[in-house]
Length: 381
View 1 (cartoon, rainbow, N blue to C red):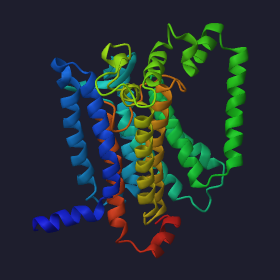
View 2 (view 1 turned 90 degrees about the horizontal axis):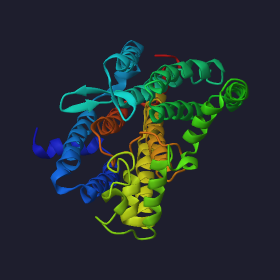
View 3 (view 1 turned 180 degrees about the vertical axis):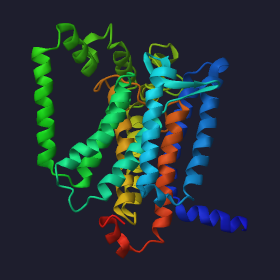
View 4 (view 1 turned 90 degrees about the vertical axis):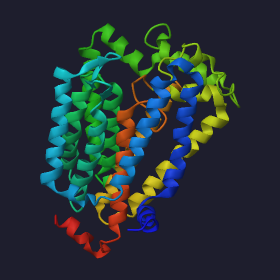
């Protein structure tokens, strides 16, 4: 195969507009890390992040060549789900504690956070489940059966404890339930029952100190000298950027180490301090464009499975973006959720690129499937 044909084959299956919108976000993360990291310590973040980005793109383009229709098979996807659930359980035995959460496997030179893989697997298994039940989707039992798939990783992650990833798992399930066509009245009844149970615990079982912990978690700025310190420093960083920002390398909150984890959880605050409101709006526009391109690819799916998977990937990204930026603005609880493409770390980057690569592979091979064959999806073929 000639070089021209090779690159032509790559181009035919990849959404280059998606890549175009991703690249400025990646560069923004790298530039922000470089600006506040001392020269002698730059390699700890900047250089390693470049390596992970290159690996991520390699995964993205490799996956775009694979026909992922085999993932619709129960005998393939269910064992993958069980395997990932077992891996999450093994964290309680073999994992190591980082920032108060036992969420990582230490593998020598780097660490691995398996919940990132489980989020993607959950999107796949929910897409498969809902795609096979289109005709009877309004039956309330599908809320509980699909909820079980989400409940298993949710509990395993919640008790690590990793509240942020547990929230993402919940939002993935909720979002895919909403787009699948399940009766909104049935869903509302389930949430009403959950609210009644929580209210009963709040008034009859929870002790005052437990209520205080829940209140501080939901609204950390009520305790800026304790649990809300990180959120308070983050809001200071964002606000001090004003309209145009302080300029690259002049973010005092991150450089003077008032802002915790400026390369990871609070990279948006570090970026906003240097680039201001204008730069922040640009980042939000780019994320919106990425979500738009993901949804465009989802609509090209040959079957409901591919379409629902694309929507699930969009929900996955939106959950991370909303939780992380909300946390940086003091609007949501402080959790260890990375900002896609910008935050430091290999695990989340790898599976962000993997999810998009799978979507590109589905988009490439959708062309070989006739739309009339979608009836087989409803018949369980």
